[in-house]
Length: 640
Image 1 (cartoon, rainbow, N blue to C red):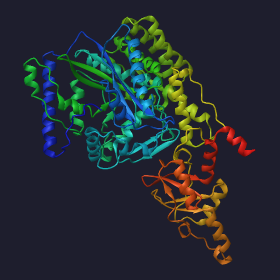
Image 2: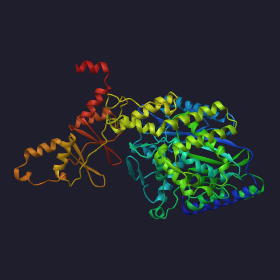
Image 3: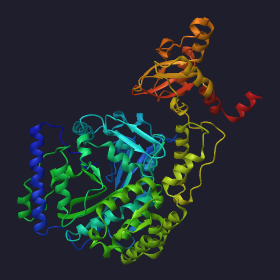
Image 4: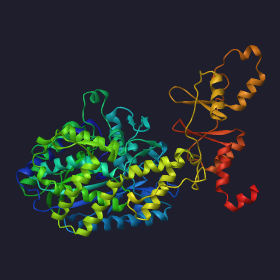
């Protein structure tokens, strides 16, 4: 999320002052380019690794600030949510054994964080979206308490003029209107940087755009969100929608959102990207202006351009232009933001090997890309890859239609091998990383494919939450074994309904709910109970507000007391419903939930988050959990 040094004053005069500073920085960048003060003849790579912190149950652990404080490691920084953090690795020369060094450094920093996380009762998990997330995990209570994040949330909500609108359809679908930017925190990525010269930036950037689709297709690792099976890389859709500040009118005009693939090839200069960010997107954050950038350039000093860089950091292109200074020398980078975290470090470095190898191996076709493929085709390829992973069919150069699997196997992986050989990468490293990808493509087993198959293989043995937890714990185990994802077996079906990691009512609640409305006739509730073999039906309004509960006991009493005349007249649910059902938070402990249920003399708990019904827990669920948590030998002795 960039620098933490932001202003909290968003008055119109402050925004105008910042905008003036941003335009002055842009003029300074233009002057810098004109004077040739961008480093050339040197290429470096850099990596940002985002990671998720989880409990042994697979649920998110809000411990990032504790870990950062205990380690004091300058490579580590916060992320938007307390269950995420980020590692920034130092830059390396582009070539030689850089991939092996990258693997060693990623493994080292992740191990360092993991050891500290263990002391806090957590672990590090690499995944694009944590399968066990629930909507209550994405509340402001989970936001990292720093001014930048609070101000970003306030500013984007103000620009959106109300809640964000998230609608994603895959095998399942999700539609929500969150009132904060916290749904963006569900996304975790591996970001790759490549330093390039000013002269080569346009064609190299265009090449990065071209290869984004096949690169994403082979790396997808985010198919599950809030228990729904969405896109193979749901992160792409979720990120765009979770910070989309466009009005309905702007969407209707096709205005580009703050998270986007872009709308055209670069023609002449990276200034096109920086100007576009300034022209298209309102200011979200402000900071103190730097010294006059043009004056610094005239003195031969590379300016930091704080206002322009802060604003650029709030416009999230999937391939982004970055400006930086190292040892007083200015440079340009292409930041590739499309890759999800995980499934393992080896898989991540294999993905990086494909990106870096293609940036060299396909350099010969980067000179005339705009003439060989319409930009809309490249953009469409990216969306297809996010939706379907290795099942996508792409439109390639000269309009050729090709499956992404064939494109990778027959053209792109061989081209990446050529590129890495040009970079003098050791052959054993090329075989290690691109061999991993070749096996992944051959088996069609991406992280997303494995997660979807694992989730389905567990069938209906338990709730959606329990299945997501099983999948997450299996991911943790295989990551610990350092197996690449194409070697992961599917989790075996457990004889247990829940699994062993039970601590809160949300771990045992049923989430596949059947409800009635207050005006529905009682016969409907009675029929539902008979058909589905349950004893409680929650009552919701058409807007989803929980207003009551109909129980089997109530219906029995009604039937026993009804006269023949009354029984012929249909009654409404609202006439008999319990208007004050027992409601609890998903985070309530099992012990406390059981105590409340039995003290109340009722038959179920309704689990509610942010005034919305999310689950139901019955006496039978508590009994099953109690048996599950007993030692096996004790269960045998007590059941005869």
